[in-house]
Amino acid sequence: MSLFKHVSTRQLRCETSLKASLVTDLTTRHIPTLLKEREISLRKTDKVFASQWLDEKKVVCGTKSNELIVLGMLSDWSFSIPVLEGSPRSQIPECNCGIHSIEISPARTLLATSGQNPNNMAVYRLPTFDPVCVGEGHSDWIFSVEWIDDFHLATGSRDGSIALWCVQDPANVSEDSSQFQLCIKSPANKLYSTLPQVYGKDKIRDLVYEKNTQTLISLSARGFVHLWDMNTCQERSTFPMKYPVETVCLSLEKDNKLFAVGSQSHVSFYDPRSGAPVGYIGSPDPGAGVRSLTFRDLLLSVGTGFGSLFFFDMRAYEFLGHADSDAMICFRSGKGWLREEPQDPLEEYMIAHAVCRSNAIYTHCYDPTGTKLFAAGGPLSLAYYGNYAALWE
Image (tube, rainbow, N blue to C red; front, side, top):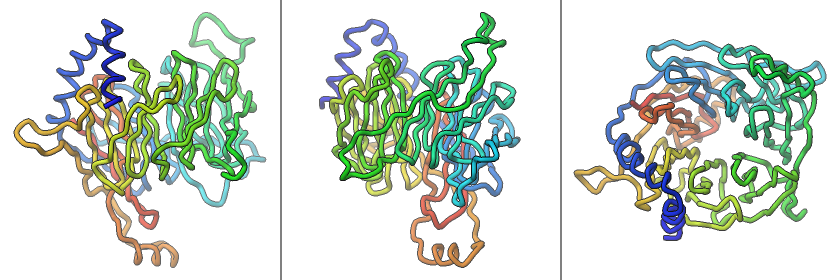
C-alpha cells in the first residue's frame, strides 16, 4: 500500500495534480473499455521492438529486421526510412539485433535511434527524416536511447556503457531553431556501472530521464538500477531489484516522481530521487515477462510476453476491471503474421522444439490525445520470425 500513499501524498501537495486526477478519472480510466483492435499489416518484417507517434496520424516503428517504418493510422499505407550508415571503419556485427529504441526530442525536431550498424546512434530531422548524423562509440548493440534536452542524449548499450552525446555545434547556434546546425563525431563522455567485479559486465537494457531532479535512470540486464546525476555525470546510487529476472523495460510517471520497472513476474515502483522502493504488483501474466510499460497520467499500461495489455490505476491501486463483472480489462494481441517456412536447418530445429507462439507486446504508446493506443511486437520465441501491430481505438 506504500505506492498508494506515495501517489496520494504527491497529489495533495499540488492543486494542479488534483485537477489532473479528475481528467484521469474521466478519460484514462474509461477509455480502455471503449477501444477496439484494428490490426495493421507490416508485411514480412520481424518483431517490432520500438514505436513512437509522430503526430495524430502517423507512427514510426523500429524492427528486429533493422527497418525503420512509418505507418499511417487512418489508412493502410506505410513507407520505409533508410537506416543511416556509419563510416567505413564501422563494421556491422554478424548478428544484428535491429532497432530496440526510438525517441523524439522534447521540441519534436529530432528523432534518435540506432543505425545500420546496431552499435551506432543515428539522428534524423523531423518531420522530413533528413539524415543529421551518425554517432560511433559503442562496441556492442544499442538497446536504449533517451533525450536529456533538445540537443543532448544518452544511449545505453550491451557493452555495459552509457554514452552521452551532443548533437549541437555551439558555434552555429542561432535564435531561429530551424537554423541549428548539428554535428556529432564521438560521445562527449561515457558512464560505466560500478558493480563489484564479481557481477561482470552489466548490459544496459533501458534508460529514462527525470528532468526535475536531472537524474538519468538506467536498468541493467542483471537486475540493477543506476541513478546518474547529470549535473556531474557521476553515479548517485546503485541498488539491486527485489525481482531481478528479465528486467527489460522502464517507464517514468513525471508528475508524481515515480518510475516503474518491468521484470519476468512483477512491476516494481521506485522514487527517482532516492531509489527507494515504493511498491510492487504481480504481473497478471505470470511467467510471460513484462515487455513494455507506458504511463498515461496515473494509468500504467502493462504489455506482456503472452500478448496481453493490462491497465493499472495508480490511485485506486488496482488493475482496471469491467463495470459489469469482476473480470480484469485485458487486450489480447491478434494473430499477426508468422513465417511458417524455416530458412535454414538451425531455424527448422528451433521451430520444431519451440512451444510458445504468442505475440509479445514489445512496445505500445498512446497518441497525443490519449484516446488511441498503438501496440506492436511479434513472436516471443526467438525461433519464430513474424510480427504483430494494431491500433486500439
